[in-house]
Length: 154
Image 1 (tube, rainbow, N blue to C red):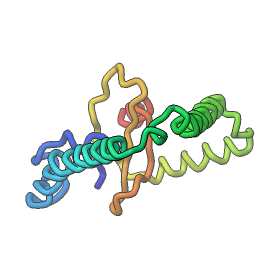
Image 2: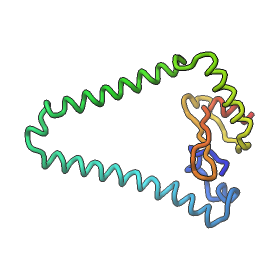
Image 3: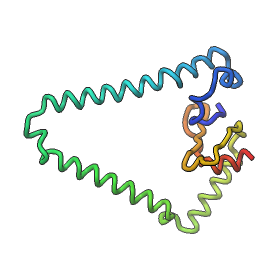
Image 4: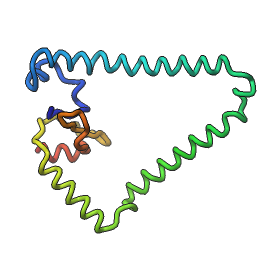
């Protein structure tokens, strides 16, 4: 399907019908607007109930501050690693000139081979929004930022 994943849940039945049959269009709308949100809410609800049950049945030593310190340190370490990784990627520390040229060449080839996409209105304040495309198997094929998408669509 040629439409971006991010905008799929906003599409009407008529927009889906332009891509597939009426029955399949209704299935898509039911999944993206009803079933998927209910599934996510249900998972969060069950996780909250499980955590509540664990805390209700824990002994005082299991709920003490000393028991939570290693967990908090672990979460802080993972968070710090992700922050450093993100900053390093933004500063392009992991790409040498040669690797960057190879990466940019592969990206240009992927963009040239990508099928044309339908145009979407792009807000001027799109900021850090991304448009993710997926292939017929449901796997993400490529992701572009909204400003890049606007340039491609123009």
